Structure formats: structure tokens, C-alpha cells
Image (cartoon, rainbow, N blue to C red; front, top):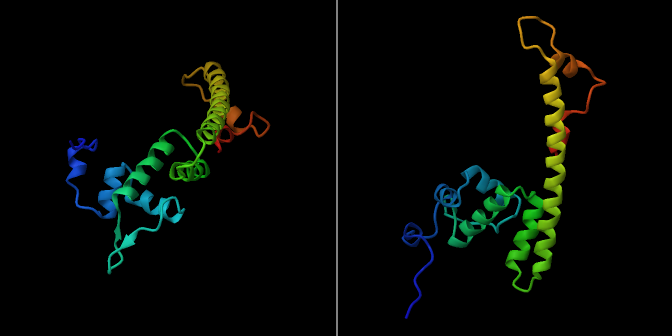
Length: 158
């Protein structure tokens, strides 16, 4: 007895290979991002028509979905490349995958702590501002002071 397919009916009826727009739609990304991921060699070079249009296989779309899910979890491109290599390596040790995920969790915790510190700083500034019709504003004073707290953007750099 044949096992039923786990794929949604819409995916079972697709005529593979598909165009970049269809592949992007199926993977939940933009066509621009599909081209970007290909340029980073996160997926093998895709086949092309005689006129140069990309043709994506079901495997390519699965890889693009993997990348999107990884990005949704905040993994860096380097981490995604490592995860993809492990995904394709059927002899991998799951401990290698777990190590990448655990390091990522630590990075997230550090970024969350930095964001919370920024929130507390901004909350202090907001509480010190009267928010009325007067022109004096401690928020603007703090933002214009080069000796004030570090740049807010520095908390979120990868």
C-alpha cells in the first residue's frame, strides 16, 4: 500500500521546475532574496532556460524554505551556511547542529540584554521629558550630547 504524500495538495500538482517567482512564492520569500541566496552559494546554481530564466526544482524550493525558516529564527548567513552543510551531510552528528543553535541562543540573549538596557535608558529619558509646549527637551539634549550613552544601533549588530 502506498503511503500518502505529506505535501499539501497545491504542491503535489506543481509542474517542476518552476520560475523564480513561483519558487519564491512557495518558499515564502521574494524573488530578489532567492537570487541573493543563490549569489551567496547557499543553494547550488539553478538551471536556466535558453533565454536565461532560472528554473527551480522542488529541492531548490525546499532549500529556500530552509533558509527562510533559519532567517526567521535569526541565524546569520554564516550559521545558515553551516546548517545547510550539516543538513545535506547525512553522516553529521546532531551535536554539531545543537552547538550552532546553542551559540545562537547565547547571542540572542546578549542582544536581548542590550535591547533591555536601551529600553531602560530611553524610558528614563521619556520620564524626564515634560512633553508639553515648552521647547526644552531632555531627550533631544541627550541625543545631541556626544558624551552621552553609546550609540543605540550598536546593540543589534551581528
